[in-house]
Length: 180
Image (cartoon, rainbow, N blue to C red; front, side, top):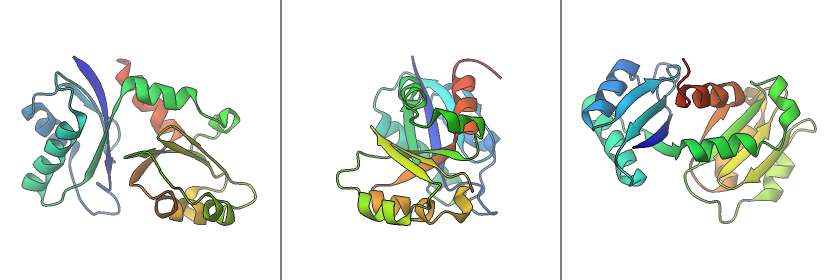
């Protein structure tokens, strides 16, 4: 059985695309997923499945939400090994002391031609960023709400992505490991 981490983009944000976690759990279970657990209301799910085709499973989850709730969110499925690798590869370990300042943007596909010059121009002096595999790391000590780099990252990277702060990533990993 494979353990997956589903990261949903754009659900339960500012009162839009509302999806109760109990409905999301029920949908995943209806698709044959086992041990479905969620972390906070913004769309972080850990579950087990016999399915190995992640793209197909992500589409089925997204389509199921569209059929039941009228919107179709992007769903990115990661293995626990992939997320653990992202955690181990953190290029800014000192930023973990302020977990809301460090964000990991998980890319839906490899970034073939990111506009690194534009990203660098948008970067404030105290901000840092780094690419590693399919993750864009952003350390924004003043928060991403005020960051022009954060606001433009997806467009400049050139692929869809979804971000989680360090605290959330660590909590999801704990949930995947069987913690509460």
